[in-house]
Length: 458
Image (tube, rainbow, N blue to C red; front, side, top):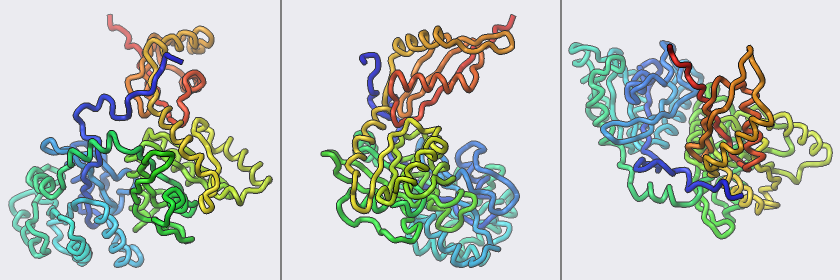
């Protein structure tokens, strides 16, 4: 079909913007010292959840920030709950993992309270990490509190920066210090990221065989494989030669619980998983074929869809699937995976390597779908035929019409429809289904934005 062609790639149209991995700043500290308020101040908008209850931060934890023309990622970590059981162990696990994934750390202390035992425990870990630390003395709203802030020199982390997250006082100096602590994004790494190997995130709940799959693809034992769920905590980037090409695989820790229920290393493991999905172009969701598709599996699927990434579903441990299980699995797929019927599915046994050669063709299909662009002429020809055959139902005496459509971007394919009125959600789903029948779009979510024409004021 000559009317559509794969686009130049996911970075088309992002002229001059850095698309490589940005430096990461982890914001750490006890509950209720104002971390989320400070994060909102840094990113310049209210996105982090702010509430006067310790431990509110759980779900959305990673934000894009920009200061003085330099972009970086801010990770807002959950506060450490002093009443949690096994406090020392829990603080150590959380702080060590938070620090290990960051390029620099912003340690927030409440200047009005001063140094607590919990602060001291974190300081030891920060010192041992060797990572650059910027010390923010928060809640310094006036000159009098500023004097108290300088008592924090005693922590041995260098100069405390007195700030008021609430009012913005002193935040500029603190951000200058943050930029000095973060590494510059090397321009050559950005170039590699654009033209380099395709980035594939292997995702799934713990113990479904993600690391076994990576080891089999690499042809050697590169990742710790243990029958204990959650052995892998950090993603491991691996360059692997497959089908005559090099691919970058990101192995991730399993998502075990909802982020807000997770704690300690699980909290950061789930954070790393969502970061890996954001960094990838395609996510390979590994499911355990001999177990029922779980709520966790569906939740990971939603994360991939919301991130707009291409998707391949790999049913692992196929050697354990008998006729009866196959029957029930087909029913589960119809019920649980109805939202992602477009994703290529492969059956594999990672342990023995059976059928893992099917992964590359599935990845290629998903990437092609993800980067497919339809010309404006072809799209509007298709929409014209669609509306003529299946017009939108009449609602309250009105029948919205599609006036014009365009595809402004790919990776994932995004369509904007200009209409005479709001479209039913069911009609939007119908349009998506027909787009897939006509143009493919295998392995990719599709975004459709409807822009109803505004009524002219008389």
